[in-house]
Length: 179
Image (cartoon, rainbow, N blue to C red; front, side):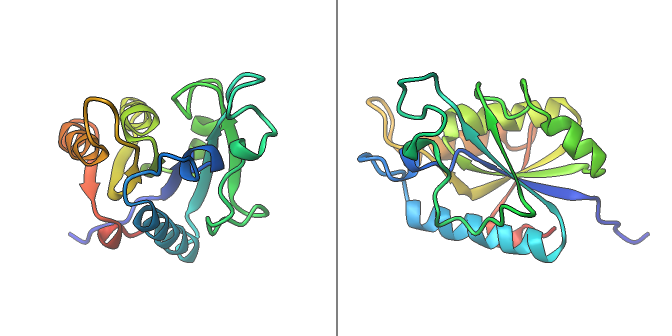
């Protein structure tokens, strides 16, 4: 029986100036950006939906709505006229947004997740997408974070790749993901 591709979409999380260009640089940030842009190109070529979300903090916070640090980084290969950019106010891109409705309208069954920060919004959205019934792919080499007091970013990423793989996501490298 032939393998039938299911409709997929790409969800890019929190690739914002205040995180990506922070004084504490994300782990392997140049590779992160390169891999996300490669995923964008693949999704665009396949005419898959591309969704980019930015975390919105309260007024006066480093990522307050409208601030320069709140903006998505200009290095992303997004097309504002065709790609959906939206805001979230919690770690989940689904909570309090129209993301689930937009995905359902497009018939999306499989969601590829990439972006920042691994231990917060990447983790949350992998679990949420899975619990909402999406076959979820985590781009193993296209999410990142910064070192913490207790763990290096490399350890955090490895831990989340291992923890999420299987019960919540299919873990794949950016090169192996196809739309």
